[in-house]
Length: 115
Length: 110
Image 1 (cartoon, one colour):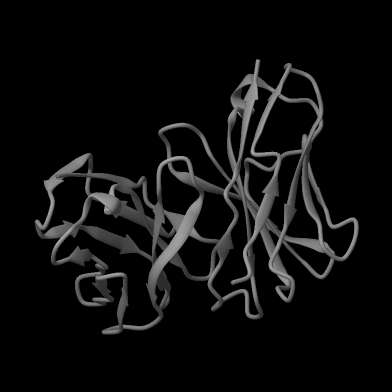
Image 2 (cartoon, chains in turn purple, orange; image 1 turned 135 degrees about the vertical axis):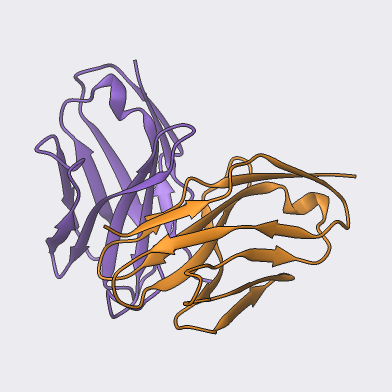
């Protein structure tokens, strides 16, 4: 069964460093998403991406964040200058056709720790 | 804005007990409703969904019915197993991105 994959599974970085989180969505999906879950808190939407551009983003997704689909398979989340409060589990998700109706399938997550 | 409220956990049950995890929502329009499960050390997995009122989603013995009149989507299972121990998230998808509840941790003991 097709699945969303994410790398790395864990990342430790120093405050102020740049990190890139990678995702490979399900191959025939068209919509891509990033979410985060700070330890013990709810899962929060960051950004959605369709047709090579951001379709929606939350207040959390400020200028420190960017997303890219550099080739036909990868979808990346970059944090330019990490802060302590960026420590969280980051989930990538993808969905098939209609952004309103289709179910989102999640990857296993990348746990980011900023020291 | 849209929101989801789940019962506070943790919930601890003995094997073969009946499970209910309450979920209510606030949304404009007619959202789709989901239950996701997160097993220890893993990511979010879709458990079941319902896209319109009175629909019942079911999977792995779990069920939830979309109740528009009570704006609820309670998760139930007739007989839980130790392997059901996980965190369960109720979520909705309307005219907004997926909105999650805070999650309910379930522990099932043998």
